[in-house]
Image (cartoon, rainbow, N blue to C red):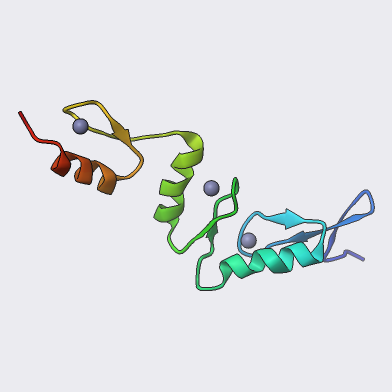
Length: 95
Ligand SMILES: [Zn+2]
Ligand SMILES: [Zn+2]
Ligand SMILES: [Zn+2]
């Protein structure tokens, strides 16, 4: 018969039903599941921080990937969020 639990070389693996998180300790999964409370199902697979929107996770993930798609035309500084660039542009006087 097939088992619901994954068995890999005798070690049981517990899978999170919301994200790709896996652990061999049931207690760890329980702790991890707390991150999904408050409707934050989008979890960063690098630092396991959770977000309520896919876009928020995508923006956050740029901290790990180093991607900075919003570039200032005036001084060339790059930002991970459009808001940060807007704020920067407002702040710097145009000559
Ligand atoms: Zn999860
Ligand atoms: Zn992260
Ligand atoms: Zn600038």
